[in-house]
Each structure stands twice: as C-alpha cells, then as structure tokens.
Amino acid sequence: MITPTSPQQASRQARCYEKALEILPEMRKGGLYQCFDNHDGSYLIVKQAYTNRVSDNSNYVVNLLTETCTCPDWQNHRDFCKHLIGVEIMLAAIDYDEGLEKMLSDFDSAECSTGCDAHYWIDR
Ligand SMILES: [Zn+2]
Image (cartoon, rainbow, N blue to C red; front, side, top):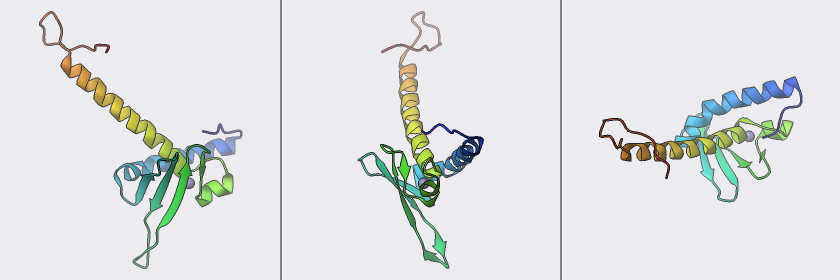
C-alpha cells in the first residue's frame, strides 16, 4: 500500500478505506459488489448496477502484484481506490477468520490439567 505524501492524499486514502469497508461485506458474500479470484494475483470486481431497470455492470480488475485497479478512480489518481483497499482488507480478514477459527478449536480441545473447568491456550 502506498504511503500518502500529502494531507490531501492521506484524506483521500481515508475516504477510500471508509468506502472499502462499506462494500466489503458484499465483496465477501456477494451482493451489489462481487469479487472473483483470478488466481494470478488479480481479482475481478463486478459492480452490479441498474439503469432504467437494465443491468449495467461495471467490471474492474484489481492487481495486487502491481497494486493497480482498472477503475476510473485509480486511473485518475494512480495510487489507491476502494477496490484495491477492499481486496487487501478482505484477504487480511479471511486470514484473520481462519486464524481465529483455528485458535478457537485449539482452545476447545485443551483442558486444565488440575481438573477445573477452565480451558487454556496450548502451543502446537
Ligand atoms: Zn478501483
């Protein structure tokens, strides 16, 4: 992720984060925004829109290797956009969920050796 070099860029990055957090649930579960892993370091973002009740989708490609996006916002500023930030947060969140799930299953399987009801963390 690019580090902002001006207050203007920093505040734009903050707005991109806010927007990314808004669309994140839909990107993860599928909704108005959908996200598809291209398995080459890039992700296809489909934004479903309807104009006069006719489907009018926009497709953008986020490339994590080059940290680029094909959307107008990224093309205009060439630093970041809500799609790029959204994909980065989404992947970090998936790692977090998997890590959390594993920790909780480890937690359940470990019991205190003194026979009390307390569970404790074990290193595996
Ligand atoms: Zn974008």
